[in-house]
Length: 87
Image 1 (cartoon, one colour):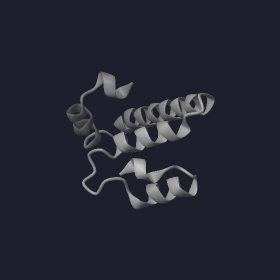
Image 2: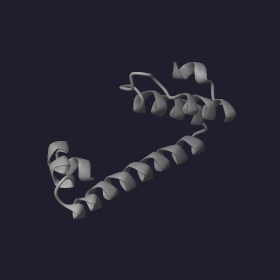
Image 3: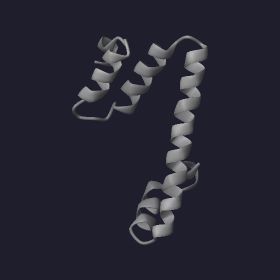
Image 4: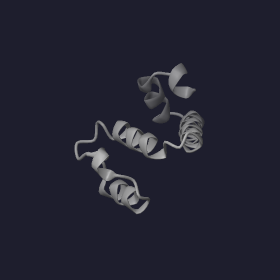
């Protein structure tokens, strides 16, 4: 919930001055990971893991100049995910 209560500029200014602000970063990261896993679990229950993963990966890397990293594509291939949908 850190991202809903604080702006990026505020957080950045605090990170450069106050070590205790790392607590906010940790809260954000834990929430982010729990949210991803909650959605992944639902995708497993709904039997649409491939759709969830391809959508998540494409959205997560949408601003990357190089696109989806090779290691992500390799991991998807190893897991039997159709990587053509990632490109």
